[in-house]
Length: 354
Ligand code: TXA
Ligand code: MG
Image (cartoon, rainbow, N blue to C red; front, side, top):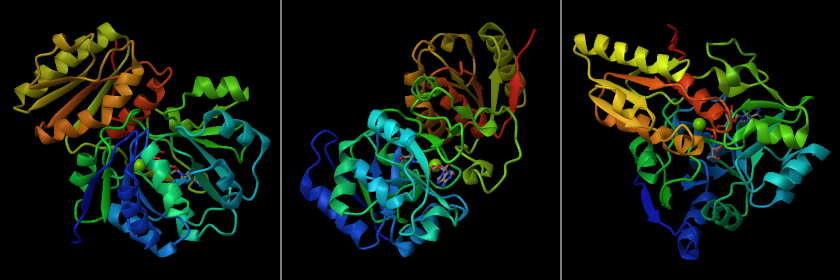
């Protein structure tokens, strides 16, 4: 076990001395967790195969699920990608830095392990001053999956990172909670029309406005397990975001959902289970469970996105046996929220109806 150093850093004006310590760690092949606008990432030099192997190991991540490569400038993409289509240039211009990851055909400088042997690479430029300072000071692209143990909810604070990875990584840069709370949207530009492989911080509706045509991969919107072709979408088949408690998601119109959840709360309480409900501001007073938490208002899906992963972790620390969660509308950031909720519950979904 190594000693993990936690360094506080100002989110708006990152102290250069602190950034240098973290950048030196990256340059030497070490592992640094850092904030982005979406979630905390666990970074390693993307061009150093040994460092990237250590990254997979620290996270206990399956080797067939490649991380995202983070860049500090748009022009860095031209070194990593073999082809940069005009659509990509338009998207980078409009959305970078920001929560949009683009899939390109990879160039020969990208090591096999960084892309799990695929002939494509996922790249994004994060919109966070600490992340950008770290990447630029390190002088290399940084491979960074979310900084959680594989399968667990993604971290939105430095403490979440430590819960999973203390003693397994070198440095954590702590700049407070992240802003968006769900990960970036992953968009595949190697197919026509472009396809969203993972809904995230850049909504589908916004991409459609810019691109005209864009498709959602069936797994991105699935409400049950879908068989995936390994070659196209590596990470989709793995379990994700799961709390330790058993979890169920209830979907349908709100009134029926509330009724169904109240019924289920009674049912599980009779079985002497400690029951948690993941509710919204509009419904929080409707439940008599052991622990009831609100994700935020249904009118502000971005607030729900921001709170989601933190609340899943909180239910675990309070030791609930089962989490019953309300579904939310799948518009805007709601699509990313539903994708995470459905995966978190392992597709144990109840469609509420009268
Ligand atoms: O917001 C985010 O994207 C965060 C922060 C840290 O930037 N990162 C993140 O990374 O969520 P990760 O590794 O947890 O998720 C990367 C996703 C996975 O679903 C993976 O399968 C997919 O991107 N991916 C990576 N390379 C790919 C490729 N070449 N083709 C298709 N999907 C790829
Ligand atoms: Mg992840």
